Length: 424
Image 1 (cartoon, rainbow, N blue to C red):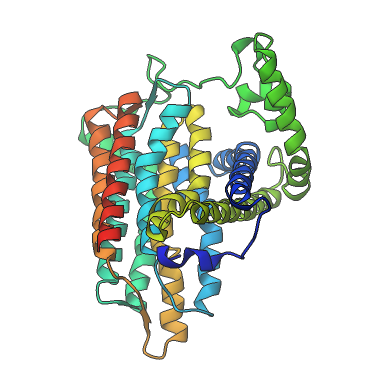
Image 2 (image 1 turned 90 degrees about the vertical axis):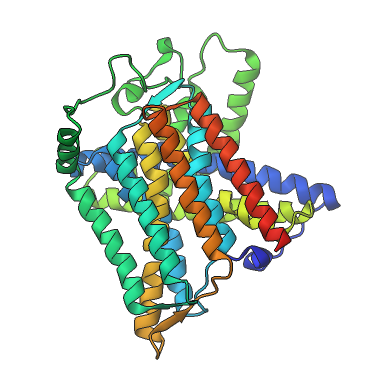
């Protein structure tokens, strides 16, 4: 989606009450869609991933970087595949860079700021692994699009790089053992002795439910119905209102998404697939409303593309990462965000380009509009390197100061990119 033509991507809609309605209604719809998206992720998608982890014997970071990333990005992949046969392949520079920087800088900040935890301990190997592959993904993308066209063998190289990423995941434990031996440390299971990264309870201890103890997540229905006795009456009123407002969509979710608990493998796959569809629909609504809101506030299209639209595309990554971060699974949260970016570059772009160049184009080259993308990809590389260096200097701990530092860096990068976009 190009920043310059984002309004052409959505149907025209007019709200009542003039300028007030054109701002107020999109805000209300966005908030409601965001709430529904959090229900999908919290009650269906994340538990589905955790169940698949147990069945496939995967570690949390591997599942987040592969299964969770694929589930979140699958709608984008399908959309790109369909559009390959009807439109010219293109890259939305603003959204590519904006969502990438948002994933590696803004999402870690939000995770620590809203998780209610002072420190989230990360594992050094998963973060190093994903950061290296992310830099490699951006590098190969920069090389592929430098001449304004993509050949079938260049796009195939992108898919092969992702295959290598999956191969590394397959031998993840063995590679961890090798890396631990190289730096003279033994592998330690579990969390540190000082309880860094322990689950921050969603409710006070006296009101915990067995479901929280078993899976670390609390169904949305229980969040709305189990009210701590020491909470003010205003909170009780808010929860009742949320319960009433979300009851229709909760009923629809229960009908369309099978429960992942104690289900056969085929139903798990169906749950995974339906979660992807719901996340795609809700993300579309959020971006649609944000676009209308930006038009009502007269925000330039270039600014919309790199900020609000790009952030809207990353909403599923944000919500799912915050949910697992609340459970103390910091490595899973970051592997989800970086893994999603890797999947988005290598597969969501590489596969449509490969099919287009090899099956459709007579000259076997896909034309690409890549004006200004080289500078944008440089920003992506710098952002991931800064994030990694911040964690290295802080002993791979995500705390408040790292969160604020990432948030400040995100604001600086966005300001710089907007300045260059508007000026040039």
